Length: 103
Image 1 (cartoon, rainbow, N blue to C red):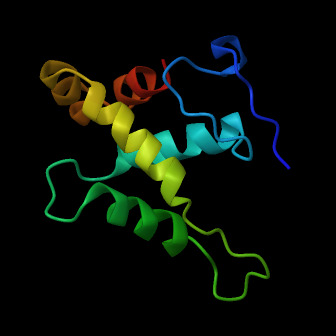
Image 2: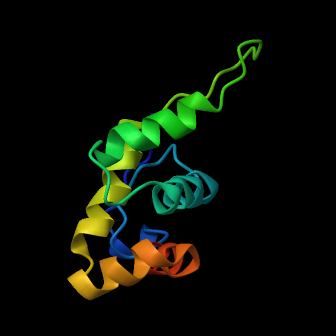
């Protein structure tokens, strides 16, 4: 059973939902994937992220990486909290995007 923290100090990053089984590396990977997708595209962000994450699996892989919808929604939620000018800058610069979403 996962331990639930009652203190905000227990969160790894302010604003991130407590998802006990997701590591900082998982969060950083999902942010990197989000920053690489088409932010002006017709396909929803979560579907684009799923396509990238699960599309990278080899047919012969014994363990396939599955998209984690809750973590994806968390990243998308962080994006939606950005101001319009921050979203515009982030959509144009991958590094800026990652910095804004990981703060």
